[in-house]
Image (cartoon, rainbow, N blue to C red):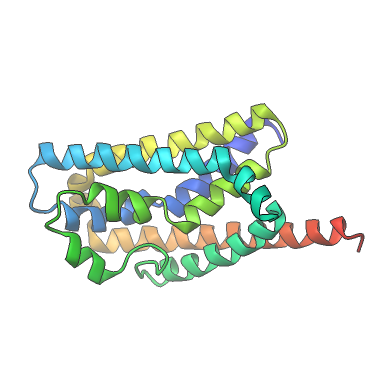
Length: 211
C-alpha cells in the first residue's frame, strides 16, 4: 500500500471513531453557558489533550502490548469487536456506551475542567480511539508508515479543533437531525472498519499458527 493509501485508511479509521461532528452536540451541551472566548479555550485544551493521549498510545502501544504478551492481531480482533459495538450505537443514533453517558453530561455541565473529562477523555479518545491508533501503528512495518499514521492522527484532531470552534454555527446549519444522519453514516463506515480489523486479525492468527 502506498503512503497516500495508508494515510487515507488511517485517517478515515481514526476520524470515524473520534467522530467530531457527532461530538458537537455533547460539546455544545457542556459549554452552553460559556461565552465564545471561554468555549474556544475549552476546545483548544480538550483537543490538544486528546491528541497528546492518542499520540502517546500510538507511540507506546506496542511496548505495552509486549509487556503483557499481547499480540497486535489479538488486539485487532478485540478492538474490532469493540468498534463494532460502538458502530451499532452510532447507527442507532445513541450515545456510545464506551464514551459518555447522559448522566455524566448533566453532572459535568457546570464544571470548569470539562475539557479534561469528559471531552478529551473519553469523548474524543475513548477505548475505541486508543485501540484504533495502537492497531494502526502495530500494522505499520516501517518508520515512514508509522509517521504517516501519526500525521493522520494529527490531521484528525486539527479538523476536530475547528469543528469545535465552529460548533454552534455548524449546529445551526445542520441541526440535530443532520447530526444524527451524519452519525449513522459514520457508524456504517466504522462497522466496515471493525469487520476489517476482525477478519484481518483472525486470518493473521491462523497463518501464524500454520493453519
